[in-house]
Amino acid sequence: MSLATQTPGRRRLMDNPRARVLVLLAPVMMFFIVFNTIPTLWLLGLSFYKYSLTGGVPPEFIGFKNFVGIFNAKNAIWFDLSRTFTFVISGVAFQTLLGAALGFLFWGSRNMPGRRVALTLLFAPMVLTPVATGTFFRFIYDPTFGVLNYLIRAVVETGPIDFLGNPKLAFWAVLAVDCWMWTPFMTLMTLAALGSVPKAELEAAEIDRVPFLRRLTLVIWHHGKFIMMLGILLRTIDSFKTLDLIIPMTKGGPGQNTRLVALELNKQSFESFNMGWSSAYAVLLLLISIAMTSVFIYVLNLRRRKETEG
Image (cartoon, rainbow, N blue to C red):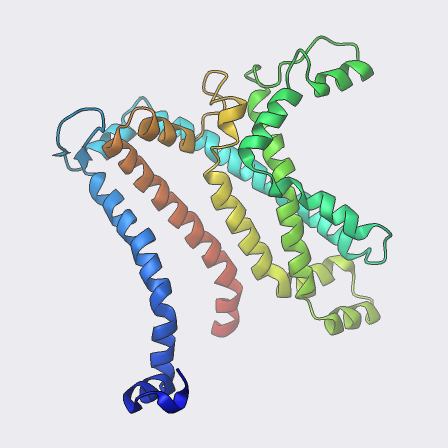
């Protein structure tokens, strides 16, 4: 419909900037309410009920008993959280450091032959699905016919190493696969952060012969910290939810050495169909994720607040 054929009321509505913003945001808000807000409220309400899909009885309101049961379940949640936080902190720290190093390497070698091919190969792991990656590495780690054991025996005379069956190695073997997958993501975020740094400031720092560490803190980090912190935040949240990599590799074993919180939630909800308990568990994990996000946002805005107060 052309502007000439529109009614005066509709024309006045579209000329109003606030009205245009509301019209454009309405579909997004509807999508957010239907697929985010309503399921979250339903999850929160179900966490106060005793309800099993296989029980054949209607939901029973029990208040906070699901939450109390989670905290009193032989310290299960504390063990899962400790393993999960070890997995998250170790993985994200290693991925950030290695990703930043690779990002600086590719940033400083723009004229390197084959740079685009190397970047394409580097970013390939994070495109793969975690289930396929977990299955792929389960065969690589296999003590009988795995290629990793073959390479180790070609260098050192030793017996077969059961990476996923050894309680001392399984956790770190899974963590290594996670780092292999997601270090390229932090490399990509590092390149984006470096691309946001004004060239004029870098050239001025080079002319003034400012040491690299001071350039890193005063110029590069000052302009690229938001992108880097955003990448760390996204990796932290995604690593906290790691599930589809664990299932094909170890299923939480050996024993409970690779059991993370997402695996326990999956077991209670989709294997035991204990919907009330799993809803309460999910609410606790949601609160932890919100707390982690708040800490990142606070750290990100800390220097800005100091500058405005000063």
